Length: 206
Image (cartoon, rainbow, N blue to C red):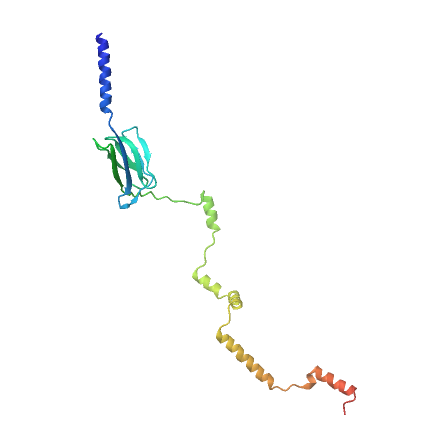
């Protein structure tokens, strides 16, 4: 009989203890902002309830979240590029609804320097190094620009300037004037010989 009473007392004590540990539920809502700019929200923040089996909730694109938690639950907010923060819900919330503005501080992480080599082995590096084409220096570029082939190519493609056109016109006018006053020997003209022979044949020569 005493054993039965002891078992009942133990069950009642455990039940009372469990009821004491059960904390009231709260509808927790809010928006996550950038601490450096209050107008900038932080989207897709991970909210972990550290006091309730580490349940996870993700905020939406506008940084808004709303879920059910218990009073005095510890909640951790984490996001890539931001320092994590942990907050605790207050106790004895009258309306059973709690709203908060969560501020996350941007965090800069300096990664170690990484050197990337495009060659898998040293043999490939030696081969590419030996066969590498070295760029021309300023002297070699100047030599190529004043070479005969380069000048001929530029002459064929570039248009003539005004001075060159004026010189060509003056030379053509000089040639025309010289030819207009020159005396041509008719004996050197085949057409004149043909006319003379035709005149003699027709009996027109005297």
